[in-house]
Length: 392
Ligand code: NAI
Ligand code: MG
Image (cartoon, rainbow, N blue to C red; front, side):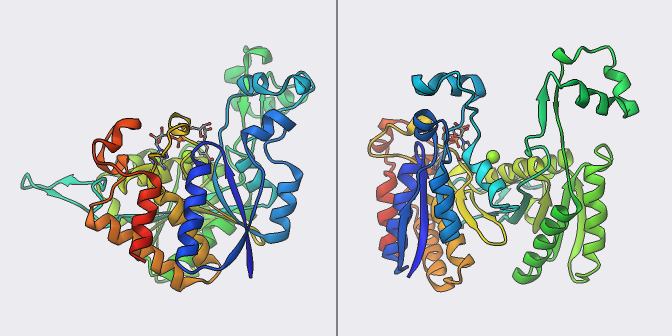
C-alpha cells in the first residue's frame, strides 16, 4: 500500500487536510498516512518550523499532502520563540518555501479551471448590456525555487556585495546611498531551471490538448532574467509546432485577465510572477477556496491548496472554510500517482455539489466569514465534505 505524508501545518490546514483524507478514503483510495510535524508550533518550541524528522519522512515516502502554514515577519517570529530559545540566533524560514528548495520542487502547477454553476465565477458585461460567463481553463506553471523568492537578499549589504554591485554602471543611481540605508533582493534565473519549467509547461499543453503556452514575464525591463526565459521559450517552442507560444508582460497580463481569460491555456513564469498570475486567475474561478497546486521535483511531490492558514477562522468550531482547494490538490496527487479513476470520481462529485448549489460554504454564498454564517444558510467544512462524499 502507498504511504502518503500528511502535513497539516497551522490554522485551517489542520481542518482541510483531515477532511480531504476522509474524502480520499470514501472514494476508495487505499493508503497509509503518516503525519509530519511542520509549522508555527515547531518554530516556537524547537526553533525550526520544518524539523529534520519531517524532511526524513518525505525523503522516504516521496509524496505529501500539505495543508497550510502561518508565517510571520522576522521580528514577530523571534518574539514568539520559547523563552529558552530566544536570542540564540534562530531565524524563521517559511517551511513550505524550505520544502520546495530542499527537495528541488521546482515545477509548481496551479490549475485555474471554472466549475459550472459556481456563483463565484467571473462574469463580464457583453456589448448588448447583458453578461457572459466565460469558462476559464488556464494552468499556471510557476518556477518554484529561484527568481525573486530564492532568498538572496540583504539589508545593509556587506562591502563585498556592495562592491560587486558597483561593477554595474546602473548602480551610479545609488552611489550616494549609504549601505545602511539600502536593501537588496536579487532575481536569479538559471538556464537549467528555466528550461525545466518551460518544457514542463509545453509537455503539459501537449498532453492535455492546450493550443497555446504564454510566457508571462517583462523582458523589455528585466532584460537579463526575463530575457533569458524568453529566449529559452522561443527555442523550446520550436519542438512543439502545434502549440503557439504567446508572450505577455506581467502588468498587461493582469489587465487582460478580465478581458479575455478564456483564451489562455498554459501560462509559464518565474516564481514571483507565477505567484501573482496564479492568484489573479484563481480570483476568476472562485478565489482561494478553489485554488489548488502541485509542487513537483524529480523525486518528491507536495500537493497543497494555495491559500494560507486563515488565522481569522482557525478558532471557529465547526469550521466555515471551503475545503475544495485542498480536495482538488488531493485530486492532483491522485492524477500524479496514476489513480486517474478515483481522481475523476472525486472531481465529478465536487462538480455535482457545486452545480446543484444546495450545499455551499460561506465564501460561495458571498458572506462575510464568521460564526453566524450557518444561520445565513452556509454549511460547515465538514458538511461540504459530507455532500461531496454523498455524490461519489
Ligand atoms: P490566507 O490564504 O490564509 O487567508 C486570506 C483570506 O482568504 C482568509 O481570511 C479568508 O477570507 C480567505 N480564505 C483562505 N482560505 C480559504 C478557504 N479555504 N475557504 C474560504 N476562504 C478562505 O492568507 P493570509 O491571511 O494572507 O495569511 C494567513 C497566514 O497564512 C499568514 O501567516 C501567511 O504567511 C500564511 N500563508 C501560508 C501559505 C501556505 O501555507 N502555502 C500561503 C499564503 C499565506
Ligand atoms: Mg500566493
